[in-house]
Length: 116
Length: 255
Image (tube, rainbow over all chains, first blue to last red):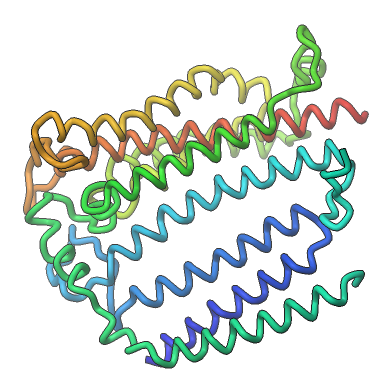
């Protein structure tokens, strides 16, 4: 039971630290990485929700007791989430590259794309 | 800090989020009582009903196959977006590719590094293929194996040069593979409609089940798995290609 609240606290900490990084970021690359930290909080939170005490991975090739396995739905969610996150971060970094080319700076406070 | 007001707003918001989150977590029934029937049914039925032993893959490519189709297209679209953003806009036609100006190694790799990487490339490819095709039996699948496979050309770049990277990942071939991988998923889903069933129903023969499960067990699951593996490999190779090209272009522009 305590592990559950510990995981919830870690998730909240990761979320808030990442959000703080995004708010105070002075560099778009740093900002993308802060977003990765925010997203890591969802991994911790959901895997904690899907875990059961004493549970094992839901792979039944050498496991006969199906009631001991953890929630496979959450695991499937996490799996696609991680891959999609990697490509979305790549997209954001590509945007950062273009912003650097167009404006010459990576500081989000000094990027002025509406300048015309 | 140039924006003291911004920090004030952040701390008010963060404190409110933390308080509401703590309140809602305290009210949760706890992991022992959170168990849904969905998990129980999938864990106890997937071996018998789908002839697959990895419940995660069964959820991904069968029970919730429609959701994974959406996620795969997020991947497809973001790779495409990154490629569009990184396309070479300011290069005059006819200009040789950046690394063609300075053939040889892109990075100063030592002989020890090159030998080690060349030795590791084969096992990496083999491990990637193994991870993709055993997705329905053991941990793994198209997403994980695809990423492993995409690192093989990157290893070649580290050991040799960008030229080699481009030669073994012929751009058009990779683009076609990505499109085929993404399209095949949807087509396999549509096959069920032609058989008069719901979209994404597992209509292929399930193959051997029980303790005799093999690579061909699971009906559409291994096929979709393979399609996803091809798509993820191609997508990540395209991303690596675009970012490497961008980096080398920058290096050439500012000698």
